[in-house]
Image (cartoon, rainbow, N blue to C red; front, side, top):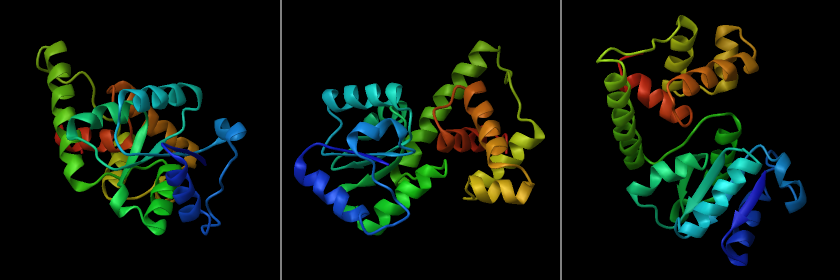
Length: 203
């Protein structure tokens, strides 16, 4: 896991919170490209912060856990574009919650505060309208039976390992199925895919 913070004090806080969790391995800066998850702690999503996160998304490509002091709803789509899959308000960032967010992101799942889920759903509605307009009012894609199974289990809160076990698939197969859905429907990440499927009546 790679860490990024706006100041030394925040960085020390992240290290202190995660240091007691043996399942979380902190990588030195020179190995950040190997990280399965990146944790970014900032007060706000300034233009400078967003630019840095976009560079990291291009260079590293790991899912991001965002620990943030203040996040406006209008900033969520930008955060998701930067590969943010979990948002944790600074005031609620206990050691256990932070570790849980990291492990959730590493498993390929997402974690958003309830009030931000509505923002994702509105963004999904916008995408759905665009797809319908492009195809004359008819959805251009449907889910395959395997995709529907996987998305239903994701909507029920199962992670990649649990889905693979229930369906007798490899974890790589499950990840490939999810990647196929997010790519075909032009969605940003797994929570976005579930929200889209539910909102569109696909599951």
